[in-house]
Length: 246
Image 1 (cartoon, rainbow, N blue to C red):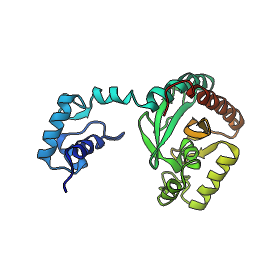
Image 2: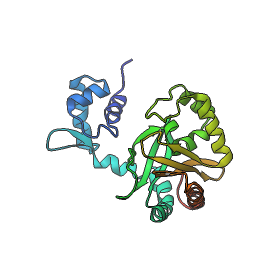
Image 3: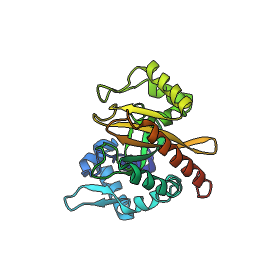
Image 4: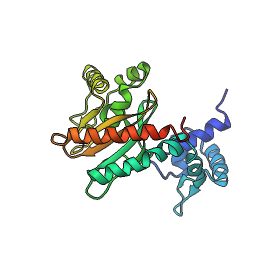
């Protein structure tokens, strides 16, 4: 049986990602694995509905209607609402890049980021996905993930920088320490010149997100940053109890 119309339309929407935010019709067909004629017809329907928008140069981008629907997701309306004041407090105190992230499959999904002109440059953006094994927030989420997720991640520990942890036994040891100490760190494992520390955000007994900070060096300020993150994470978890969250 061939792919349904729904699955084809979803394949077109799924062709967009953080590195491909604007795509031509030909690129959409190629990335979605669909015939050009089929892509043309479905893109037309998605455009009329508002799921896609067309730029002056002819490329397609995600439309406002998808953005409006995304705002209804609990991770947006609940988690970000609860976290917002604590993220701003963290940024105001540290002037460092502050991340809020959740696990999406085998990757980290960044749902919020605050940064300024003096913050360390990072590759993450709101809505972007990065490997769990190379990020502070990712290690936190992986430490509390189901065993099958950990097993799958350990099968593909991609080297991103010279400092990325690619040995399964070493990563497992780090995850054990995360659970024991309550925080995770990275040292230039995702980006050179960027170190991070992250802690879990709990809703009851369940880890639902990770909160992290990126700085040039952790050696002198690790205890202070861990303390600030844990206070903020506790506040977010407490607030989650009073807002819509699933």
